[in-house]
Length: 180
Image (cartoon, rainbow, N blue to C red; front, side, top):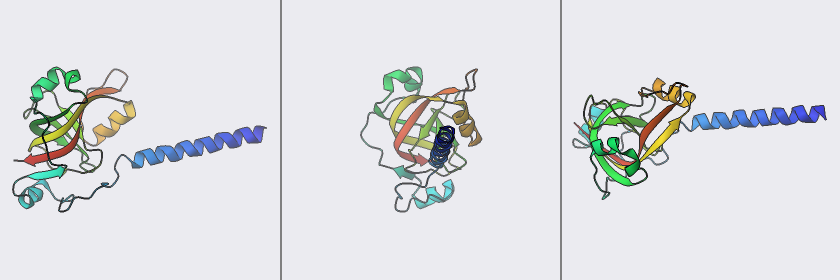
């Protein structure tokens, strides 16, 4: 029985390790859908030039209602889960792969929101300071200490709780437009 017990523990540990390794791989997979001419490896300047002054990623920004970024920051719960369009400026971009960006209503604003793309597309890693228009949904997310540390290593700025965890307002974008 002891051998069976230890074999079961070893199997469970190896499955957990494989699961954790698989989860980590999903943090930065390759895009699921390559967009024609998307220029995933281009710098922001190259992508702007190639796109006629605009960088477009994901689905076309559509007909969802436009909301003032400042209104969302004041009452995030009011907009949670509703498809909206927001505009502002890019403050930071994931330096590992361009898989998220932090946006604000204007340059140097105290509050910002991290935008994710569900790894369907990426933005140039040097797209900070560009203006943006994006369509998607807002949500409040809770990050573990490890998740918060991982994001900070990629360049994110988070407000941590006493225990090292963080609560953040996020925006899951289906489409993004960037310009100077």
